[in-house]
Image 1 (tube, rainbow, N blue to C red):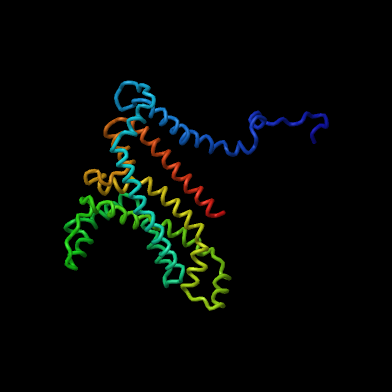
Image 2 (cartoon, rainbow, N blue to C red):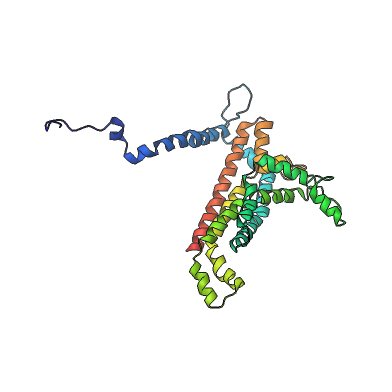
Amino acid sequence: MSSPHASPRTAPPVRRFLPPGLLFALPFLVLFGVFMVWPLAQGLWMSLTDASFSAHAPAFVGLDNFTEAFGDAEMWRGLWHTVWFTLLSTVPLVLVALGMALLVHTGLPGQWVWRLAFFAPYLLPVGVVSLLWIWLYQPDLGLYNHLLRAVGLDGVAWLSDESVAMYAIVLATLWWTVGFNFLLFLAALQAVPDHLYEAAAIDGAGAWRRLWSITLPQLGRITAVVTVLQILASLKVFEQVYLLTKGGPDNSTRPILEYMYDVGFTGYRLGYASAISYIFFVLVLLASAVQIVALRRKEK
């Protein structure tokens, strides 16, 4: 037994100065600061210099990189390609995923096969996906041109025709990434209360009436969330474009992230590339804010 006159146990020095909640969050805060905050700050500083791969120390140039970027026609062209890809890909990636989820949820035989088939492409690395679609798009030996010739049509230069290349990239992206949205919709469908369908069946509502009056309204919130997530994902397009077309033909499919990569790692202008990245970062933040405000207004 301890003596009644013993002094009370003192808390460790760290606990005296830091609240317990902060101690639990400290490992995350350290990693977040090292791998997120510090790179962001370093990149912002680099955008204000003429940093490159040369041996000389970067010189401070102020806002010269940003001024040059706003007058750079190639940057705006890359931004338009990014927006155009986002517009082309978002609608099918939402609607096709919704249709796939509805088909599986209706109780098709062998549901695990359908779920695996719909979601499996999402697990493939981008290099494998790009190599597969390059073969499918081959002008002479590709599957799609073979099917076109089988019905008496001419083959298409899928990846080397400016009028077709972006649509070819969108089609490959749809096959590759639609599984993620499909999974979100399927989870939302399984959360719809069964008693709504039971009450509709008692009232004599058919399958289409239940779809339009119960299922789709119940999916309104998840549809908005999926749309926002898809827009943000499409704005960050880079890998599949770089591997399929390298931004060609004649830079007609080069998104802003690839232009940023070319400027920084081919042109060795790291400071200018950093300035472009922060301009794009701010534009994505603005687009996200507009979508969040619109979503909240819709919910109210």
